Every structure is written in C-alpha cells, then in structure tokens.
Amino acid sequence: MPTDAEVKKIIELYRRHLNRSLADLLRFMGFEAIEVRGQGATVYDTAGNEYIDCLAGFGALSMGHAPQPIVDAVVDQAQKLPLSTRLLFSAPEAELAAQLARITPGDLQYTFFCNSGAEAVEGALKLARFHTKRTKIVGAIGGFHGKTFGALSASGRDVYKAPFQPLVPDFAHVPYGDIEALDRAVDERTAAVILEPIQGEAGVIIPPQGYLRQARELCTERGALLILDEVQTGMGRTGKNFAAEHEGVVPDIMTLGKALGGGVMPIGAFVGTPAVWTMFDENPLLHSSTFGGNPLACRAGLAAIDMLERENLAARAAELGGYFLAKLRQLARRYPQLIEEVRGRGLLIGVSFADADVGGMVIAALAARRVLAAYMLNNPKVVRFEPPLTIAREEIDQVLLRFAEALEQTAHTLAELGIEVPGETE
Image 1 (cartoon, helix red, strand yellow):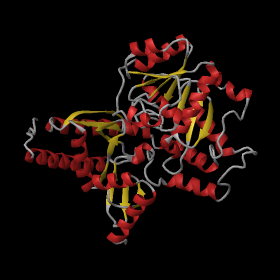
Image 2 (spheres, helix red, strand yellow):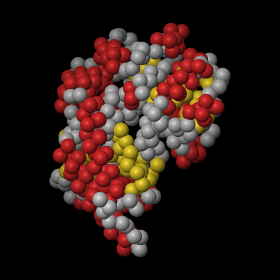
Image 3 (cartoon, helix red, strand yellow):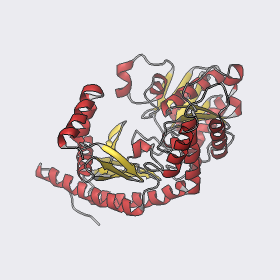
C-alpha cells in the first residue's frame, strides 16, 4: 500500500508535468487520493478506500467500471488485431456502423468513427457546411460541444472561448429553449442548427416540451440541417437509448461519444442520413482519422450496445432516475436555503445550489464521505449526479444518506457564519 509520501509524490508529478491548477483544485475539493481500480459503481484508491461514483467519467462510464463483457471483447481483439491497416476492410467497424443504423432514430444510416465527442462535432459541422453549401451555424447559449476550435465555436460560454479568439467564423447563439429566438436566427445562410436534447454542462437544462420538434420543423422549412449532440445524453442515459426519442425527433446528423466505448475504449461518431452523406461520395478521404474506427474501440462499442439492450439499461435509468430525483427533491425541500432546484431526466441529474461556493462546500463534504460528484462545466452552481446506469438502488440510497449528511454539515457551517438555514419543512 502506498504511503502518504508516495501519494504526495504522484500529486506533485501532476503539478509539475500535467496541470498544476487542476491538481490544486482536486486537492481543494477533497479528492486527494489515487484511483487504482473500479467495479460497477465503486472505485477504490491506493489506501483501499471505496467511493461510490456518481460522476461516471462525466458520463463515459455508463456501463460501470470495468464491465466484464466489454473488457473481454477488447482483450480478445487486442490479441488479434488492435489497430487497422486502414487499407483492408475492418469487420468490427462495419458491424458497429450497422448496429448504430439499427438503434438510432429514423433514417440515420451512415457513420464516421473518430476518437471523442469533440471530434464527432467537428465532423458533423464539416458535413453540414459541405452538404448545404452554406456557412452559418446556429447554437445555443449554454451549449457545450467540446473544446476543439469548431466545437468550441459552436459552444455557448465565453469563459472557455474568450482566450482563443478569433474562433471559427459565422457562428451565432440563441437562448436555449426559445423557439422564437431560433426562428429569428435561422435564415437562408444557415447550414445547421446544433443543439443538445438536454443541455448537460449548462446544468441539466431540459427544454420546453415540443422545442426539439419545432426546431426540426424549422430546419426542414429553411433548408438547414439539425445536428443533435447526444455525446452525453446517448446510450440510455436519459431513460431512452437517445434523448431525441423523448420527442420522436430525427436529426440529420447525430453526434456520439462517451458511453459508446462502454467505459473501456475512447470512441466518438457522427451518424447521418443518406441524404447528407454525399461528402464522401465525392471524395471518400475528404474527412479521415488515423485511429478512428479502430478495431479495439469498435469491439468495445459493439459490446456496449449489446449490454445496453441485454440489460435494458435505458429503462433502468428511467426507473432509478425517477426514484433518485424524488428523493433529492425531498432533500431540497428540507434545505431550501441551500438548494434552488433539482432537475433531470433518467440518470442525468443536476442539483442547483444557491451559489457556486455552497455547491463547492457540498462537493467537499461528499468527497469526505467518499462520493464522487462534480460541478457542471458551464454552471458551477450545479452539481451533477450522473452515476453508471448499472448502479444499484442500495447504492443510490447510500448516496442519498451521505448527501443528506453533506447538506447538514454545510448548513451547520453556514449557520456558524451567521446565515440562517431553515429546518425540515415536511
């Protein structure tokens, strides 16, 4: 077992060779430990401590840590052909593309594989501009699509964008959920509208019922494409295989990532209809990736889809998410001065606090109780609960118990500072 000195050595290596400020932030939040292994929704550190993971790698670990069927598939492939020659046909890549055509909505049929959600967004934007011969892209304020230049240009929070200006030109942003604002923004120059079916990093913002359907109709009417970013919401997270299915909407292009690799391999993808896939008819190498669609990642993706369906994880997320939400809302009523709102769908849940400092105190208190949670990138007032879809109800009950303790500790600290916190109102 590593000594405290050895743990401090690893943290110092982070500070010296990776990201000094991130290392300091993690320590400040109470995550001063080194992960060594995981199983299901449990993570173990070098001291043997157990953590309940309610972050799941920001949604990448939807099938849990080290899911055995996916690990086995990747190990089997690694012993045969880890990477592709890129000149011969790859069975795992073709089979995964066929499976995505089967499970994605409507007539989405063709897939390009890459290595991350941000790369998938980059490809989707290129495809939209090529197909429409237009340049304008309309996104939403608060949207998050990645941090590469095109994905960042489509995203809607200046704190990540301002240091890198000028970004890719001809991007516009409108308030999320406001169909009238979208109507005004989409014109004859618009190549695509890019939206998250539920805004994740903005704080789990669910649009008004009918918004996505109206956006679909608006794009069709104006000759623009609709890109739905399902990098975080896809693969069962919100109680459907894909969040677009809550409104029965079929986009022209869908972007995927995170959970598609089953928590074992990184993989991203953009999936399109036959009508928009003409870019590759004219030049099959106009967009390419050395490692995209590699056999290891595609075997992981195939096993992830099998697990998604065999274990009925979308329905499980809907059931457990409803239970989790109801219990969290009870706690919100008990601590109204701390919690503004609890919102979510399936197992994508955001707890909005009075301010970011209160949220930070709660995260630290959760860390002390060995529950992993984090801020939303675009809204530090909101702490996410985004556990593996395989989490047990008993583990959720443990999280709720520890969360209640964390709230009580935070309320006590604030009271000591002279801020009155009401008691239970039920």
